Length: 297
Image (cartoon, rainbow, N blue to C red; front, side, top):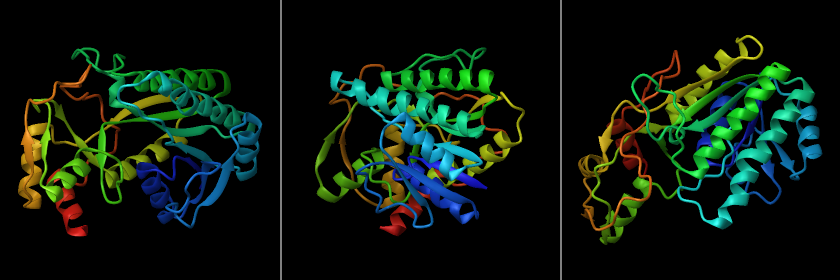
């Protein structure tokens, strides 16, 4: 299969790109001009997007993919005025260009990534209810509306994977594991919130596995199908419990001052537990995944 991948220079996208190449698919990575492509899998054809709608149409038509894996995204937890244009550009304008290019090139299958943050709070009888945590989450939901148009008007088949937090080898993002690694190495004391927020983590290998399942499902679906499913780890734990697990697995000391910082505005205290992608389940338990990361250091 020929697969067009966006976000291939990022952490999750890079692992997905590599996994698809390992499976024998012909892969192409769409990147912006000036992007650092040094971490891209060398088996990927690099397609440089000049930012224009016409340019992206030409790239899609030239590569002729069988399906698109749309992973590129702009994440901002709490936006400032300067973040608005980048959020709209990355999460809506580029996505709309991509959907239109697919439609006009006869490409009718897409797997894209949403976020559990599209569901700030839900009731048991409405697990898919939309309540955005942030402007970032709102832009991800708005992209779903664009998908709906192309599905109903042009026969697009779409499957959205809604992720919680992710981790794994090669992660350079400023996430909780990187933070704990830093303070364990420096010996500094870190001021944190009370730490009672509950979350879960998915190993990036499990995300790649979910993409495999989603790709098979969406390419076999009838025209106009639109689905969304959760991809998440099985272990739900508080931030306090996770720090303790980190200490146990790594044998490292981390000095935390709990309650020295307030929870941020619209802090997610309980993770969204929407319906899981059919045919997929977690393969890398959190303790095992953490231990492997320590062994690789």
